[in-house]
Length: 237
Image 1 (cartoon, rainbow, N blue to C red):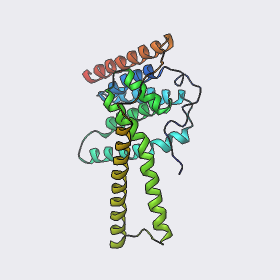
Image 2: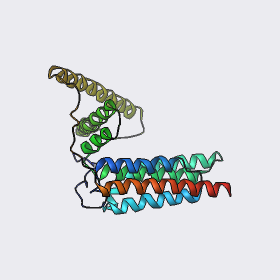
Image 3: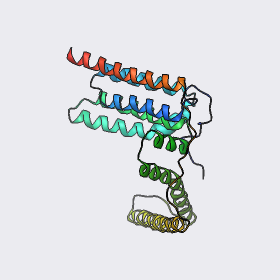
Image 4: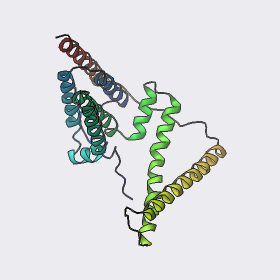
């Protein structure tokens, strides 16, 4: 099975890739929290511009970017349409959410995922949550492979997806089987870890933060403050 890993292009050479993972996550999180709190349309557009600029700096192929973000963008668009129907302002929400989605992609696509997890731990993220993220990322592909095996088995039995009662029953049984196998696998993994004396992931790192990394964090902090100054100024006008 081919996995569409978010960190497939973590090996590229770009200004964003070269950053210390801790500095990169810290700077992008600063922009992220600033973005979701913006209230003005102009500042939201500026935030989206900054996010796209960071994305282009990564030199990751845009086709891959679209493949990774298309479902998130569809979800954001659907939420925006719903808000428009109920009389809310959808444009600000769409711009903020899209900017946040791009920033998250930049943060985790420019480093190996295990390195990003260690960087999260390095900037004070709770250890228990970093372990949950690590195991989730590891075993989500195992569950995907289980689903592929079940789907292949159905195809070999000439099963066809139709809008019928039989299809609903078959899908329900497939989901139930997937949950049962997931539970059994989790139990086996848990017992194996206990028997091996598991006490937590080894998150020791050799990160080194330099002047360029500090400059990146300072720049993102400046941009975050500038966006809010622009938002407050436009909001008062």
